[in-house]
Image (cartoon, rainbow over all chains, first blue to last red):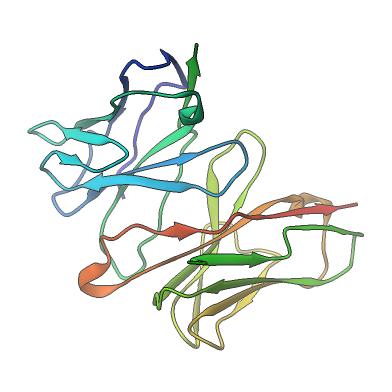
Amino acid sequence: DAKTTQPPSMDCAEGRAANLPCNHSTISGNEYVYWYRQIHSQGPQYIIHGLKNNETNEMASLIITEDRKSSTLILPHATLRDTAVYYCIVKGTGTASKLTFGTGTRLQVTL
Amino acid sequence: NAGVTQTPKFRVLKTGQSMTLLCAQDMNHEYMYWYRQDPGMGLRLIHYSVGEGTTAKGEVPDGYNVSRLKKQNFLLGLESAAPSQTSVYFCASSYWGQLSNQPQHFGDGTRLSIL
């Protein structure tokens, strides 16, 4: 599975959009991009995933570049409850669908 | 709407003691996983299972054993606990096959301290 690179930390004002970048330049054609977050010490929470098209759900939007070498997770109106560590993970659909977690981006939402 | 349930939530052991962590899922998922998370680090895969009666090693399997006797349950055992196994343990489950691109669902974790 391809490796990812994320900034270690970011700040965002409450009510503004939070844009979290992720580089995955070695991604393969059958690998998906997944985003999870971990609030405090809770279990990782799934946010969104995509293959090559942009995706949107009730939590966030995922923008994947045309060459698929990078992506951006967008939280449209960040709240204090969105303060968490966000993980960008690239994963194929092999026999064992293992997730490889890096150190993620710590997003701090402030008033 | 339970999802993935881990038991117990907290436990303190003495070095050399044994214990079993239980993970149960009610989503009829084929795949199940055990991860550990140490302070300031991402999750690391210990063992996983692709179906009832099957298990496989992840990236940090030493000191742990697992069993998947029933599809909905995945047990993680520590035969002789060591302080280095102090960690937060997370269980996860997911579909396979045509649905294998679907996300893994995680439990709330078991916080284990070895003295």
